[in-house]
Image 1 (cartoon, rainbow, N blue to C red):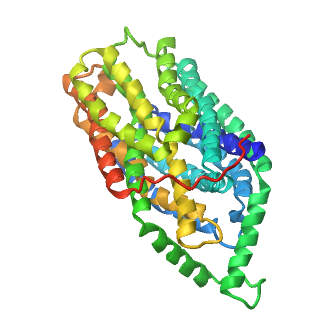
Image 2 (tube, helix red, strand yellow; image 1 turned 120 degrees about the vertical axis):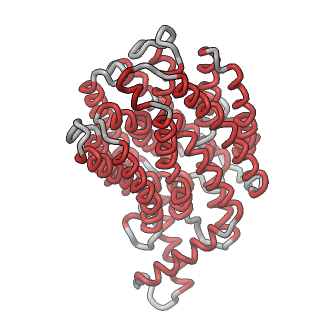
Image 3 (cartoon, helix red, strand yellow; image 1 turned 90 degrees about the horizontal axis):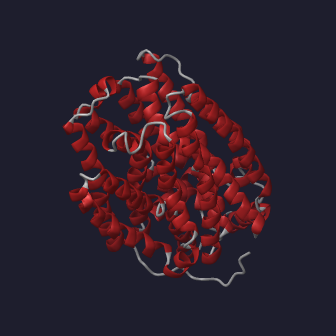
Length: 465
């Protein structure tokens, strides 16, 4: 079992080292460094939201078509990895930093290309996670631990980048770091495709053939037509989205993703404005260490509580985090103390980023449960993970647009010119920081408790290496 779990960890690291840098820096780079104007930024985010909405289901359904090479999870990860890292490097090479339309077009192309290849590999990774750990809750938590160790290692990139690039003041160094991260990611994804459990793909092909023979007795060599594939996809989609369990997962995951994106995209902006320079100077070791604690803390909490999560259940841990999030927002009454703000940011990071990976477990549990309910010979993880992305990915575009709008309404553009924050801007940032977890956490708790069945998945006795 070790090789498949290592494949999960390596592919997770390859994806995470790129995604961490992307989420943490792309808004700041395109606004502060490339000077894309607000109109183009909003257009790019709107188009990106649309592309996010359709590309995951496209890749998800393609990866469940019988006989397609895309159904081979390991091959998808290996062959598409060069295209993913190429699009990542392309993102950080400016076309024109004078605020012209060219940079707006560059932002759109960068988001479209990067997210297309990231989504294709991400859907394959989600399916690999579900297939490798099917009906094995203990192994599923173990696989999550491997993936979190990979994320833990990848988040060091933020501290290194902040220190060496002096918080983007030395942009050439930032670009060099991104190139190095891309090469490292390519190596990891390639080897992940080699190490995975190829018997899973073989079993999947055999199950496809068995299912096809049952439905269409005559010729096992005959492939389904395009219209039959479409009809089957529509049928499967209806069966999935009609289940309350699935709707509860995707609605809460949407809000969770919005919170996570807000954290990663605006942590450096928030810190710069509400934490005095005497405490966390720009480009200092202190600032790098603070960001390292914010990014490493959630992963460490998850890694060292593997047995607790397996015993309590991922869904119950998620539910408890929503309660903590709701009440944490009331700490705004102590927002006058910068150290209290820093402490709150750490607690909030833990309740957001520790919980986010647990969605992989409950989505995989849903895949197993859906297969039992609908008497499927095997689960359909690619479709389930891609439908989850269909509902959730728009949050990646909505959150930046909303927060950039609120910041600009409070004088953020003037701050960029003068570096003098107004009381209105600081007040707006504090409201965003403290009220987001309180409002969203409350909504998430209500949705999950009212729509999700909290019974534990069926446990199959399995030796975990």
